[in-house]
Length: 274
Image (cartoon, rainbow, N blue to C red; front, side, top):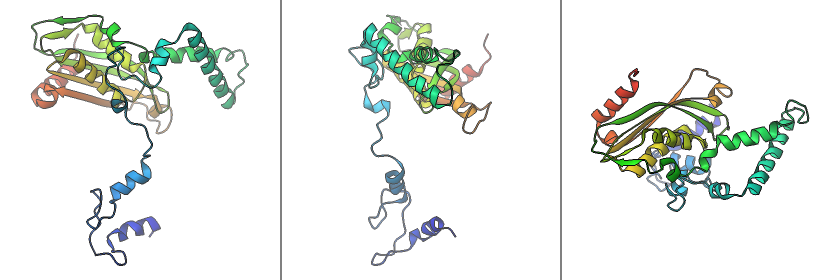
């Protein structure tokens, strides 16, 4: 038996001088005050210095600037001058040239000589969602309307970058809501999805941010968002499983509370449509 297995097996054996009580693996501590297995796992494996989720480090909406979940450098990037933007691109290009050199390529070869600046500019485009302002995206397209039935825009194409490996994930998102006397221009649903996808993301957060921002803007009876995407970090590297897809959802309001409403939404987005 391995040492680790022996340690686990003996976890219920009393220590010298301590009462013989079972070791609790589910709570925060055992009945005799010792830390539980879960507590020890959290303290040894999870980094206590790790920064919080974006849901906790910033308000959902920056009331002054209209930014949603602004990151640490968002305002600096958004407000920089043309000269500062040029300097940013040059710093990025220098770093990318180093990467090209480190993978074993000649950064001065004709085919890749201009790649560092090209990629720097492309990366700024891929992440332009950091700079986008919700006020400009909505552009006063919230209308009073006596409509209280489901509104759905489905199969919206999204392209994003996995924040763990900075490789793409691509897929489709479907967004539904039930108005409470206010509706949003249909194209704005796609623009909201686009704004959040043009950031370094994880699919779980992207799904939730779309739903929560729509809830904040319209205050509807409920919001439902589903997303299915293929992640290149699972296809091109790591487990290397082409054809696999990841499905996430976020249900708020009546979609979360009423199973029939939720099922109607899921049935409608599965229908073939036009």
